[in-house]
Length: 216
Image (tube, rainbow, N blue to C red; front, side, top):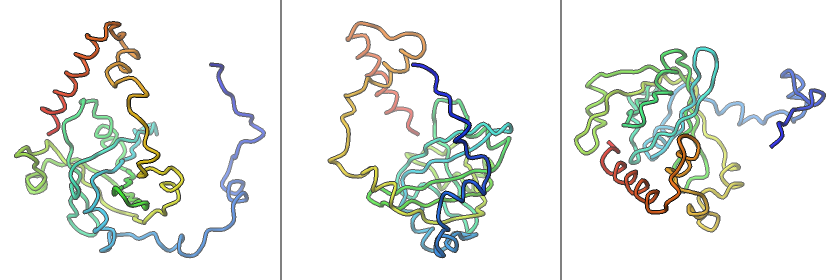
């Protein structure tokens, strides 16, 4: 595939040029940003089983990572403080290392069946405080640490993106079998996947078994 190069004649170089392309925002959009978690925001977070967290390293390299657990897995410690448990993963630690270098984070909370999302921006830190972690145990397994987020901004995001994408509509769900398995893709991208179907199936089964034993 040939590399695409943007035409600099069509580049947007400053905020004034950007805003000239759009009408002014409406009053509610400007006023809805809150400095703390009100009752509605707290209720939304307690219903949410899934969020995405955006981070950056010291040089500005960005990353977005998913976090998921039973609904209400994020603890609302007060109107300005959230705690997110860190569950076992692949130990790349991208999000956690970024937070150490640059504490600014953005959170996007989702609730299955809700077309609206909740956006939270703030500063994060990493803690091993037992007072925070003990309430986050699942199957008697306490997380190694939690991401503590000091909230600076919170607001609900409208339903347009989810309605355009039909994200929750089963009629628009795609068959996972239309793409190769995760193991097949990862091996194709790295060391090479086995050509024998039985060998690949064994690897797929092994990943499923690992999921069962390492979720928490």
